[in-house]
Length: 228
Image (cartoon, rainbow, N blue to C red; front, top):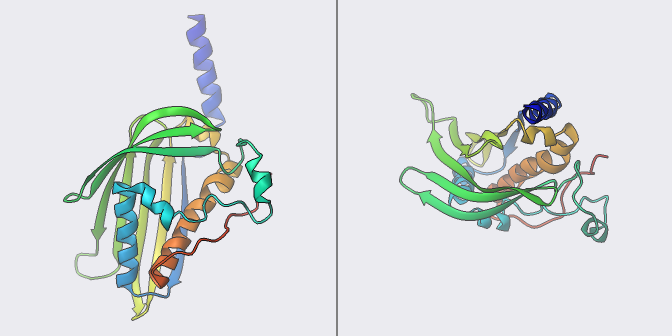
């Protein structure tokens, strides 16, 4: 009974210091590309996220592992992941299953926190839906919803809403939302969120915009100054 009481006390202590479970990046911009090009990019991102996530490192995820401009690459390589650092959480993709008819996917992943594998064979399930208002062609909304096995995350959403304002310009609204599980949220302080996750989700959108406008993404050094 004493051990059960101690475990309960520890769990209560951990969750009482947890950060917000729901966090998101929201962006609005004008993309210098047609809505067709933006939709093609959104479709490509969601398909590869579901069916072949490794392909995203060739364009949508380019630059996300680069060192911040304020640090030298050699210095970064010598560091171990810190609790407030950019590499506090790492995902390792494994098996993949994709249903093209229903646009659903399932990816098995291992999750590392501070360089240690904490969760093995977690499953990320996704469903992609393209929708528009009942009596209007626009705005057109690409929505990918994610669910997770286990309790590390309670869900997530990627929303890309598009509306043309001219032949070669599109108004785009972007949301990347994550709902962390209660235990994992204890690791996601405001500094960890900003240094390790928020800037990456924002730069994914920058890469999507670049791809829609130019048809490609050029690798470049990215990343904010790491908060201490």
